[in-house]
Length: 50
Image (cartoon, rainbow, N blue to C red; front, side, top):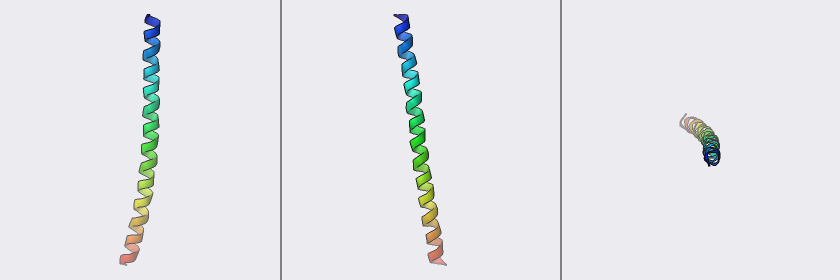
């Protein structure tokens, strides 16, 4: 019974770490897209003013 409980806890920890890493990857992708979009719109806005 103790071994089964240990395996369940380890599976939850590894699964949680995997979800955390996947979430960080998606947050990084979204941040990069927003950064590029902001840079492009910022440059276009400055050019139209000048």
